Image (cartoon, rainbow, N blue to C red; front, side, top):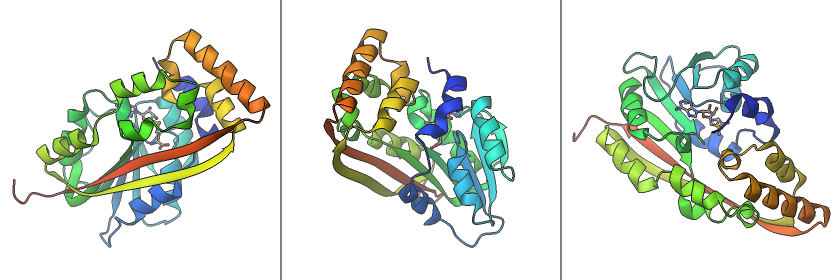
Length: 248
Ligand SMILES: C[S@@+](CC[C@H](N)C(=O)[O-])C[C@H]1O[C@@H](n2cnc3c(N)ncnc32)[C@H](O)[C@@H]1O
């Protein structure tokens, strides 16, 4: 079980908004006024904070964790925050121009609810943006070497991209784009990742058993002190959907 209250305290240690992902959101903007944006699973509000710099949007954030929301509220006081989950979004129908869910949907098992709720609260021609990773992309993460059990966990938690596209389509959300972000470099095992592992700042750490976790952490720490290198390969996918009532 993930302890969100613990995670929230340290969440910003290894997270910022990703500027490429932020740009994908910016690419969706149009001249509508008001232009309402919902960050579903907003966490500590890093994306909302970046969007607040534009000073021209009505910003909303929803998360299931009060501890995450407390931090987000301090960071982006002008946004309207609600506690809740994917089963019932507390907004009226046809309300938002843009909804996005970044690094959230692998936390959700009954994902059908999310698509039907998003379809309800999104305006026609509004966009829904999901950032996630495929199993193939997860299989190249550099830390798999230390925590090979992570892949078993990912297979249980992450949704296939094609499955998501079909589910969206069943809810009047037409798939219009797929964008892949890729980073690659060889580097010394970085200190930030050792701290991330110690503080369990990726959710899979909560699911691997104690012995495997301790063994992986020990090897990782040794490699860090011995200045060993790893090949950093990081790929993720953003899916873009548009609510369309045509052809349904
Ligand atoms: C990895 S964090 C991502 C936070 C933020 N989107 C970001 O990119 O920094 C996942 C967040 O999703 C939230 N979450 C998980 N399941 C949720 C659900 N069913 N409904 C709403 N929020 C959820 C968690 O509380 C957590 O804040």
